[in-house]
Length: 438
Image (tube, rainbow, N blue to C red; front, top):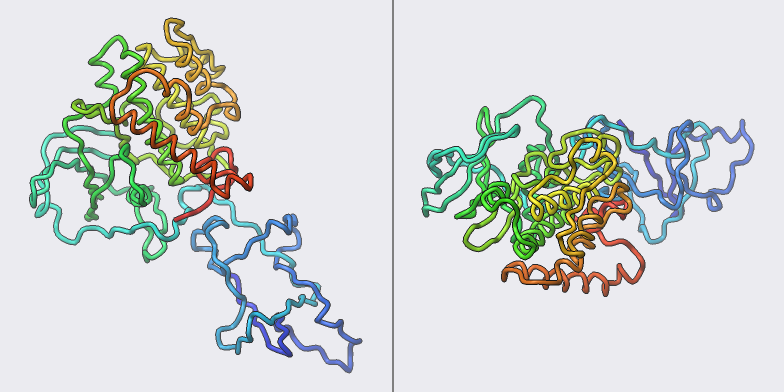
């Protein structure tokens, strides 16, 4: 455990309290007023760029460590010491040559997802206190996967139709720390809480509340009705849907996926099975955060990845380009009725067979999403503003989506952040760095 270094006050100059030498046995000491501040580090560790060093919180290394961007400044001091006015303090240096100059780097852990921490102001919703059976009734099974089973349900208090997901507890479950909550929170619950940060998106199915029982977690989710999965919807409209209908559905899928990345959530499974289509309004919503995780700005290796995997998988891959690839594959299936790749090798080399009966704009968008080099792939911002979405007829909700997105992009371009040349936080795979706003 990192030990606290004491500070002493002497003529408004503060420095670490070291053993006092016998002045009769040693030579004169250097003038502390001209010394430079240093940061503790193991001498054998590589020296970081000093301009990029950030303040660190003293913490037990057994406790999962957060990323540096969510740390808060801490003063190394004994709480019992008298503290001078910080505005007049002058830094001094450690003189003992055996004291390391900087703190060691953050420990490398085997699971990025296990060590993530979410800071304020995630709206923490504790598990419901009343028994599940007193509040809800559940009926037929509507979906089952590796993370749990989903049933139709009714809220007894008002008859509201809901979806109820039962998730068996496992020893391999991941948990995420949320500031303000004493205990780590089950990962899927924590991700759903992150997604509930305002403003909400109309393209996401949200968790309403949750229960923790002895053997299961129970999630109460919104249930659009009448609805069917996008895969079922496309199957019912074989061999393909026209570009006008595809355009209205795709813009909603893109904005739902973008909303996840804006919240620093990597859905990990963008595909037709995880999209619900309201058959009355043609509204589309993204569902199922069971395989999701927080965005890792340094990338991922291996791990769960559903949908159409990009050619860089299972080597290092990133949330943004991977999501763009999945959306491109989904668009191709919508407008052609086929998979974009005939073989696994075709996928590895991004050999897409383009249907030349499609419009020039749709062909261009598909090619930009399914580019082999992830650095050259279109970003989700570029996808949402592509010319294909600016033409033809779309449903009212889809047209409103495009107009809202255009207004937001204009505000982003006019923001001081954009003027300073900084990449906005909704550009996770090009920023190389995530701004933690939790």
